[in-house]
Image 1 (cartoon, rainbow, N blue to C red):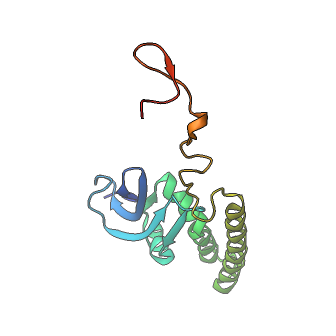
Image 2 (cartoon, rainbow, N blue to C red):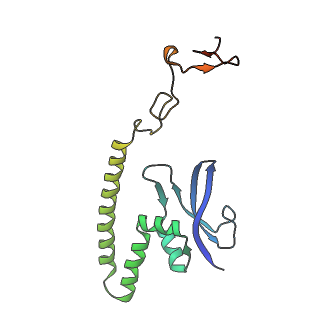
Image 3 (spheres, rainbow, N blue to C red):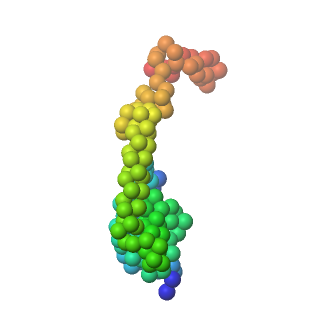
Length: 165
């Protein structure tokens, strides 16, 4: 039975939210799965990922194949790097303590980099921390004052400043 680590879509229309699941490759995308190992929300900046690193690592060791998107998520969270380091331990290149030290160093640098990116995105985002613009914002509908309304033509063909209001 081929096993995949993939995304299972939830959320409403145009508001995706995903579970990261281990499932039989023949099962439908949103159907039956073996185990849920995390969540992925692409709508936040940067995208938020909660992942049980140990469960993901166990499934990779058992031979589960991640899809392309999940492979990027696992790489982002350091699971693939940890698998790589543990393979080095198994081959005798270095001991377990050295592998964990390397991973902790990488993890600390990665967290600092992510925090820096998050701060930069907050500074550059228009419309405040929520990111949504109100109706009067630069992306909202334009409101005309009575004096600057565009002229509309009526059925008779004569232009008027506004409808008979």
